Image (cartoon, rainbow, N blue to C red; front, side, top):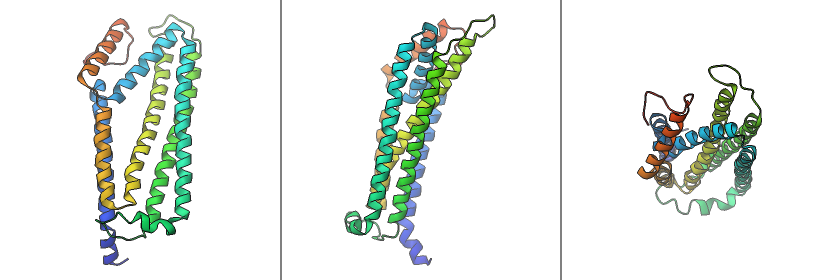
Length: 254
């Protein structure tokens, strides 16, 4: 590969690396915010709410509610996994007709080089993203099924500092949060696919689409002041009534 070839691919490589850095940096920022103060993000609030939900379902023996809620979550993950497979088939179909569509795909590329050698690589990256989303949704379905068995199991009370029901509730909430995290990461894969599709039209479209998607996700992931105060009061009240509550650090206030 000559220096001219490297210079030809430089805009695509630079925009791709920059877009990955922006998106991964945003994910790290949201993860850090969720750990330091859970009520600042929707992800943190959802994790706390799932833990409270598991405890309340197991302690009050609301089996029907648990089955219905987990069924809805499983159906949602199944639908998204099926959508990922359908999109994968669509991308594979387009890859077979790339010769006929090259003119259309490069029509809007006014800012970058009109080279077509990177088109197969772009399609492969989109396929990898869709496959990753599918496996994450499938893993979410498996974890939801495991939580269903853990919640509906009966545990006998014994004279211990922490009852088996409390231990089981903590394990079930951990598995449920894992399922929710996998579902959320699968959705992130769908969001990443949007900039990758715009990459077909040119490297600058990739960069602009990434910035727009990150801005939209930031407004969707953060919580407003009223919602934050509401969830903070609920969580503090729940933990004040339960001495075994592990949702919050007793030495810290969210």
